[in-house]
Length: 321
Ligand code: SF4
Image (tube, rainbow, N blue to C red):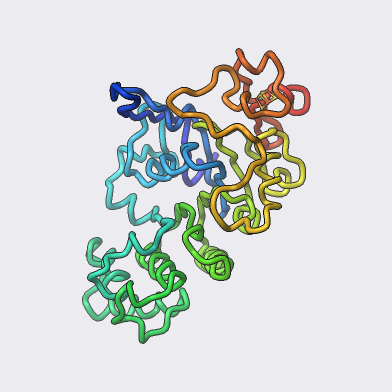
Protein backbone atom coordinates (compact mmCIF):
# COMPACT_ATOMS: atom_id res chain seq x y z
CA UNK A 1 0.00 0.00 0.00
CA UNK A 2 1.31 3.46 -0.89
CA UNK A 3 2.07 5.48 2.24
CA UNK A 4 0.52 8.95 2.60
CA UNK A 5 2.60 11.82 1.25
CA UNK A 6 2.97 13.25 4.75
CA UNK A 7 1.83 11.69 8.00
CA UNK A 8 1.85 12.34 11.73
CA UNK A 9 1.53 9.27 13.94
CA UNK A 10 0.51 9.81 17.55
CA UNK A 11 2.69 12.91 17.85
CA UNK A 12 3.17 14.75 21.14
CA UNK A 13 5.04 18.00 21.74
CA UNK A 14 5.30 19.91 25.04
CA UNK A 15 7.11 23.09 26.07
CA UNK A 16 8.50 24.15 29.42
CA UNK A 17 7.25 27.66 30.25
CA UNK A 18 7.51 30.01 33.26
CA UNK A 19 4.12 30.93 34.67
CA UNK A 20 2.48 32.54 37.70
CA UNK A 21 3.80 35.03 40.27
CA UNK A 22 6.70 32.77 41.23
CA UNK A 23 7.54 32.10 37.57
CA UNK A 24 7.40 28.36 38.23
CA UNK A 25 8.36 26.09 35.34
CA UNK A 26 5.25 24.43 33.94
CA UNK A 27 4.66 22.03 31.10
CA UNK A 28 2.48 23.17 28.23
CA UNK A 29 1.30 20.24 26.15
CA UNK A 30 0.80 21.93 22.77
CA UNK A 31 0.19 18.79 20.73
CA UNK A 32 -1.14 15.71 22.47
CA UNK A 33 -1.28 12.43 20.54
CA UNK A 34 -2.12 13.81 17.10
CA UNK A 35 -2.36 11.57 14.05
CA UNK A 36 -2.92 13.14 10.61
CA UNK A 37 -2.52 11.96 7.03
CA UNK A 38 -1.94 14.25 4.07
CA UNK A 39 -2.65 12.45 0.79
CA UNK A 40 -1.18 13.63 -2.49
CA UNK A 41 -3.22 16.36 -4.17
CA UNK A 42 -5.58 17.08 -1.28
CA UNK A 43 -6.12 20.18 0.82
CA UNK A 44 -6.35 19.26 4.47
CA UNK A 45 -7.82 22.10 6.50
CA UNK A 46 -6.71 22.31 10.14
CA UNK A 47 -8.98 24.57 12.18
CA UNK A 48 -9.26 25.68 15.78
CA UNK A 49 -8.83 28.74 17.96
CA UNK A 50 -5.48 30.43 18.65
CA UNK A 51 -3.40 28.44 21.12
CA UNK A 52 -4.88 25.05 20.20
CA UNK A 53 -1.58 23.76 18.74
CA UNK A 54 -2.06 24.38 14.99
CA UNK A 55 1.16 26.33 14.49
CA UNK A 56 3.18 23.81 16.50
CA UNK A 57 1.97 21.16 14.06
CA UNK A 58 3.04 23.40 11.16
CA UNK A 59 6.55 23.76 12.58
CA UNK A 60 6.86 20.01 13.13
CA UNK A 61 5.68 19.17 9.61
CA UNK A 62 8.25 21.60 8.22
CA UNK A 63 10.96 19.78 10.18
CA UNK A 64 11.65 22.88 12.31
CA UNK A 65 10.59 21.27 15.57
CA UNK A 66 11.06 17.61 16.46
CA UNK A 67 8.20 15.70 18.09
CA UNK A 68 8.85 14.37 21.60
CA UNK A 69 7.05 11.15 20.85
CA UNK A 70 5.37 9.64 17.82
CA UNK A 71 6.62 9.94 14.26
CA UNK A 72 6.40 12.26 11.26
CA UNK A 73 6.80 10.45 7.94
CA UNK A 74 7.34 11.78 4.43
CA UNK A 75 6.28 9.04 1.99
CA UNK A 76 6.84 6.52 4.77
CA UNK A 77 10.31 7.76 5.75
CA UNK A 78 10.96 9.50 9.05
CA UNK A 79 11.38 13.26 8.61
CA UNK A 80 14.04 13.20 11.33
CA UNK A 81 16.20 10.84 9.25
CA UNK A 82 16.01 12.95 6.09
CA UNK A 83 18.41 15.71 5.10
CA UNK A 84 17.03 19.09 6.16
CA UNK A 85 17.65 20.68 2.75
CA UNK A 86 15.95 17.79 0.97
CA UNK A 87 12.90 18.24 3.20
CA UNK A 88 12.88 21.99 2.51
CA UNK A 89 12.80 21.32 -1.24
CA UNK A 90 9.70 19.19 -0.86
CA UNK A 91 7.80 21.03 1.92
CA UNK A 92 7.56 24.82 2.03
CA UNK A 93 5.69 27.24 4.32
CA UNK A 94 3.45 30.21 3.56
CA UNK A 95 3.03 32.23 6.75
CA UNK A 96 0.35 34.57 8.03
CA UNK A 97 2.24 37.84 7.94
CA UNK A 98 4.04 38.28 4.64
CA UNK A 99 5.66 41.51 5.80
CA UNK A 100 7.56 40.01 8.72
CA UNK A 101 8.55 36.94 6.68
CA UNK A 102 10.17 39.02 3.91
CA UNK A 103 13.60 40.63 4.33
CA UNK A 104 12.89 44.39 4.09
CA UNK A 105 16.39 45.11 2.71
CA UNK A 106 16.08 42.73 -0.24
CA UNK A 107 14.31 43.33 -3.52
CA UNK A 108 11.43 41.14 -4.65
CA UNK A 109 13.71 39.47 -7.20
CA UNK A 110 16.37 38.67 -4.58
CA UNK A 111 13.78 37.36 -2.10
CA UNK A 112 12.22 34.96 -4.61
CA UNK A 113 15.65 33.84 -5.90
CA UNK A 114 17.09 33.12 -2.45
CA UNK A 115 15.91 29.46 -2.18
CA UNK A 116 17.43 28.76 -5.62
CA UNK A 117 20.76 30.11 -4.38
CA UNK A 118 20.55 28.18 -1.11
CA UNK A 119 19.91 24.94 -3.00
CA UNK A 120 22.51 25.73 -5.69
CA UNK A 121 19.94 25.60 -8.49
CA UNK A 122 20.87 27.21 -11.84
CA UNK A 123 23.32 29.96 -12.69
CA UNK A 124 22.55 33.65 -12.36
CA UNK A 125 20.78 33.89 -15.72
CA UNK A 126 18.69 30.79 -15.18
CA UNK A 127 17.68 31.92 -11.71
CA UNK A 128 16.63 35.32 -13.04
CA UNK A 129 14.52 33.69 -15.75
CA UNK A 130 12.88 31.36 -13.23
CA UNK A 131 12.09 34.27 -10.91
CA UNK A 132 10.38 36.25 -13.69
CA UNK A 133 8.42 33.15 -14.74
CA UNK A 134 7.29 32.56 -11.15
CA UNK A 135 6.35 36.23 -10.71
CA UNK A 136 4.16 35.94 -13.77
CA UNK A 137 2.59 32.74 -12.42
CA UNK A 138 1.60 34.35 -9.10
CA UNK A 139 0.38 37.59 -10.70
CA UNK A 140 3.26 39.95 -9.93
CA UNK A 141 4.13 42.48 -12.66
CA UNK A 142 7.78 42.30 -13.91
CA UNK A 143 8.33 45.94 -12.88
CA UNK A 144 8.09 44.86 -9.22
CA UNK A 145 11.28 42.78 -9.55
CA UNK A 146 13.40 45.64 -8.17
CA UNK A 147 10.86 46.80 -5.55
CA UNK A 148 11.27 46.37 -1.80
CA UNK A 149 8.58 44.78 0.43
CA UNK A 150 7.71 48.19 1.94
CA UNK A 151 6.67 49.39 -1.52
CA UNK A 152 4.13 46.58 -1.98
CA UNK A 153 0.55 46.08 -0.86
CA UNK A 154 -0.30 43.28 1.59
CA UNK A 155 -1.64 41.11 -1.23
CA UNK A 156 1.47 41.66 -3.35
CA UNK A 157 3.68 40.75 -0.40
CA UNK A 158 1.80 37.49 0.09
CA UNK A 159 2.23 36.77 -3.64
CA UNK A 160 5.98 37.27 -3.17
CA UNK A 161 5.95 34.85 -0.22
CA UNK A 162 4.04 32.29 -2.32
CA UNK A 163 6.47 32.74 -5.25
CA UNK A 164 9.41 32.22 -2.90
CA UNK A 165 7.78 29.08 -1.48
CA UNK A 166 7.17 27.63 -4.97
CA UNK A 167 10.42 28.56 -6.71
CA UNK A 168 12.11 25.24 -5.85
CA UNK A 169 9.06 23.28 -7.06
CA UNK A 170 8.01 21.72 -3.72
CA UNK A 171 5.19 19.17 -3.50
CA UNK A 172 3.63 20.34 -0.23
CA UNK A 173 2.75 23.81 1.06
CA UNK A 174 2.08 24.32 4.76
CA UNK A 175 -0.13 27.44 4.68
CA UNK A 176 -0.40 28.86 8.22
CA UNK A 177 -3.23 31.44 8.25
CA UNK A 178 -2.17 32.62 4.75
CA UNK A 179 -4.84 35.32 4.47
CA UNK A 180 -5.69 36.42 8.00
CA UNK A 181 -3.31 39.43 7.93
CA UNK A 182 -4.85 40.68 4.67
CA UNK A 183 -7.79 42.96 3.92
CA UNK A 184 -11.01 41.03 3.42
CA UNK A 185 -11.15 42.21 -0.20
CA UNK A 186 -7.72 40.66 -0.92
CA UNK A 187 -8.25 37.40 0.95
CA UNK A 188 -10.31 35.68 -1.74
CA UNK A 189 -7.80 36.69 -4.43
CA UNK A 190 -5.00 34.94 -2.53
CA UNK A 191 -7.16 31.88 -1.81
CA UNK A 192 -8.12 31.64 -5.49
CA UNK A 193 -4.46 31.97 -6.45
CA UNK A 194 -3.56 29.12 -4.10
CA UNK A 195 -6.36 27.00 -5.62
CA UNK A 196 -5.18 27.69 -9.18
CA UNK A 197 -1.57 26.91 -8.30
CA UNK A 198 -2.57 23.65 -6.67
CA UNK A 199 -4.42 22.53 -9.77
CA UNK A 200 -1.72 23.66 -12.21
CA UNK A 201 1.26 22.33 -10.26
CA UNK A 202 -0.32 19.27 -8.62
CA UNK A 203 0.40 20.58 -5.12
CA UNK A 204 -0.76 19.27 -1.76
CA UNK A 205 -1.72 21.71 1.01
CA UNK A 206 -2.11 21.72 4.73
CA UNK A 207 -4.23 24.83 5.26
CA UNK A 208 -4.20 26.08 8.85
CA UNK A 209 -6.86 28.58 9.83
CA UNK A 210 -9.04 29.66 12.72
CA UNK A 211 -11.67 30.52 10.14
CA UNK A 212 -13.94 27.77 8.82
CA UNK A 213 -15.15 30.02 5.99
CA UNK A 214 -11.62 30.05 4.58
CA UNK A 215 -11.28 26.30 5.01
CA UNK A 216 -14.66 25.59 3.39
CA UNK A 217 -13.49 27.53 0.33
CA UNK A 218 -10.39 25.37 -0.10
CA UNK A 219 -10.28 22.11 1.82
CA UNK A 220 -11.12 18.60 0.63
CA UNK A 221 -10.85 17.26 4.19
CA UNK A 222 -10.96 19.04 7.54
CA UNK A 223 -9.45 18.32 10.96
CA UNK A 224 -10.76 20.29 13.95
CA UNK A 225 -8.31 20.86 16.78
CA UNK A 226 -9.00 21.70 20.41
CA UNK A 227 -6.35 22.02 23.13
CA UNK A 228 -3.74 19.90 21.39
CA UNK A 229 -6.03 17.15 20.07
CA UNK A 230 -7.89 16.50 16.84
CA UNK A 231 -11.49 16.24 18.06
CA UNK A 232 -13.11 15.70 14.66
CA UNK A 233 -11.90 14.88 11.18
CA UNK A 234 -13.96 14.25 8.05
CA UNK A 235 -14.31 14.98 4.36
CA UNK A 236 -15.12 18.66 3.91
CA UNK A 237 -18.69 18.03 2.68
CA UNK A 238 -19.41 15.70 5.60
CA UNK A 239 -18.00 18.02 8.22
CA UNK A 240 -19.77 21.11 6.92
CA UNK A 241 -23.00 19.24 6.15
CA UNK A 242 -23.23 17.27 9.36
CA UNK A 243 -20.79 18.27 12.10
CA UNK A 244 -20.72 15.74 14.94
CA UNK A 245 -18.57 17.32 17.63
CA UNK A 246 -20.16 20.17 19.65
CA UNK A 247 -16.99 22.23 19.17
CA UNK A 248 -17.22 21.87 15.39
CA UNK A 249 -20.87 22.95 15.61
CA UNK A 250 -19.79 26.07 17.52
CA UNK A 251 -17.06 26.88 15.03
CA UNK A 252 -19.52 26.50 12.17
CA UNK A 253 -21.88 28.91 13.90
CA UNK A 254 -18.98 31.40 14.05
CA UNK A 255 -18.83 31.41 10.23
CA UNK A 256 -22.15 33.23 10.35
CA UNK A 257 -20.61 36.26 12.09
CA UNK A 258 -20.79 39.43 9.94
CA UNK A 259 -17.08 39.58 9.05
CA UNK A 260 -15.69 36.08 9.37
CA UNK A 261 -12.33 37.13 7.93
CA UNK A 262 -11.56 39.35 10.88
CA UNK A 263 -10.12 38.31 14.21
CA UNK A 264 -11.00 35.25 16.21
CA UNK A 265 -14.32 33.57 15.64
CA UNK A 266 -17.09 34.30 18.07
CA UNK A 267 -17.82 30.70 18.95
CA UNK A 268 -20.77 31.70 21.08
CA UNK A 269 -19.48 29.37 23.78
CA UNK A 270 -19.32 31.95 26.53
CA UNK A 271 -16.53 30.57 28.69
CA UNK A 272 -13.08 31.67 27.56
CA UNK A 273 -10.62 29.34 25.90
CA UNK A 274 -9.08 27.43 28.83
CA UNK A 275 -5.53 27.95 30.03
CA UNK A 276 -3.47 25.33 28.13
CA UNK A 277 -1.26 25.04 31.25
CA UNK A 278 -4.26 23.76 33.17
CA UNK A 279 -6.31 21.73 30.71
CA UNK A 280 -9.69 20.60 32.03
CA UNK A 281 -10.08 16.98 33.13
CA UNK A 282 -11.98 14.40 31.11
CA UNK A 283 -13.08 15.91 27.82
CA UNK A 284 -11.04 19.15 27.63
CA UNK A 285 -14.02 20.87 26.01
CA UNK A 286 -16.45 20.11 28.83
CA UNK A 287 -16.40 23.56 30.60
CA UNK A 288 -17.64 25.18 27.36
CA UNK A 289 -19.73 22.39 25.93
CA UNK A 290 -23.51 23.02 25.88
CA UNK A 291 -24.08 19.25 25.75
CA UNK A 292 -21.68 18.18 28.54
CA UNK A 293 -22.75 15.29 30.77
CA UNK A 294 -21.36 14.21 34.17
CA UNK A 295 -19.31 11.53 32.37
CA UNK A 296 -17.49 14.22 30.35
CA UNK A 297 -15.90 15.80 33.43
CA UNK A 298 -13.93 12.72 34.43
CA UNK A 299 -13.49 10.51 31.37
CA UNK A 300 -11.71 11.51 28.14
CA UNK A 301 -13.88 10.50 25.17
CA UNK A 302 -12.47 7.69 23.02
CA UNK A 303 -11.90 8.23 19.31
CA UNK A 304 -14.53 6.67 17.02
CA UNK A 305 -13.80 6.18 13.32
CA UNK A 306 -16.05 5.24 10.43
CA UNK A 307 -15.84 5.74 6.65
CA UNK A 308 -12.83 8.03 6.95
CA UNK A 309 -14.50 10.23 9.58
CA UNK A 310 -13.23 10.39 13.14
CA UNK A 311 -14.65 12.06 16.23
CA UNK A 312 -13.84 12.27 19.95
CA UNK A 313 -17.05 12.84 21.91
CA UNK A 314 -19.03 10.62 24.29
CA UNK A 315 -22.23 11.63 22.50
CA UNK A 316 -20.93 10.27 19.22
CA UNK A 317 -20.22 6.80 20.53
CA UNK A 318 -23.46 5.52 18.99
CA UNK A 319 -23.41 7.73 15.89
CA UNK A 320 -19.90 6.68 14.80
CA UNK A 321 -19.52 3.15 16.11
FE1 SF4 B 1 -19.27 17.83 25.04
FE2 SF4 B 1 -19.02 15.60 26.48
FE3 SF4 B 1 -18.80 15.49 23.84
FE4 SF4 B 1 -16.89 16.64 25.30
S1 SF4 B 1 -17.46 14.48 25.32
S2 SF4 B 1 -17.76 17.42 23.42
S3 SF4 B 1 -18.10 17.62 26.90
S4 SF4 B 1 -20.63 16.04 25.00
